[in-house]
Image 1 (tube, rainbow, N blue to C red):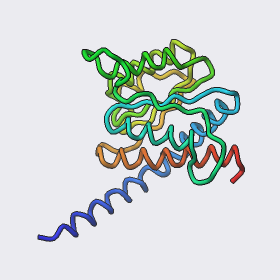
Image 2 (cartoon, rainbow, N blue to C red):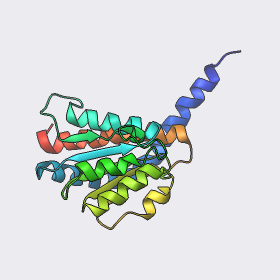
Image 3 (tube, one colour):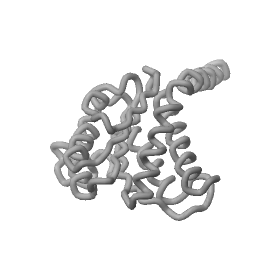
Image 4 (cartoon, rainbow, N blue to C red):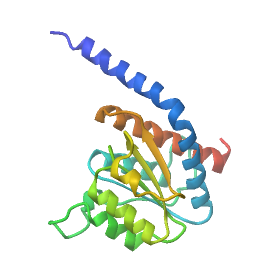
Length: 192
């Protein structure tokens, strides 16, 4: 039995999801790039978090900012918080360590970028709550309607909702949005 049709279906579904998201996401991505760039230019830092597969995307964003994206440039102040609260000794509440990390590292003027597939990760919500307590802005990147994360955002925060209910499509789109954010920041900082 050939897998070719299934593989082709995956490519088609991914491309369609990207087309569906394109017109909806341009404006919030542009807003997010401006907010992130202002933070960096104001000597702030970007804390990035997520749980599960969104934690991998968070680590990718922080690495692309702190190291490089498409071209060489000085590193930018971005930190990926330990995924799933792995740096915290409390085994009974994994993920809640993200909030503790935000409390330890975050300051007014910094930004928390919170990634979640559908906005339901308790640890990520805790990180957002702590960021608000520390007078930080929050950028949420999630699928669907943003779930519980979207409902706790404040007016000055930025919400990027990927219009899909498919986990694979949301994850693929998160990486595309991350690349758009990095490219936009590089454009503002380097003019390239």
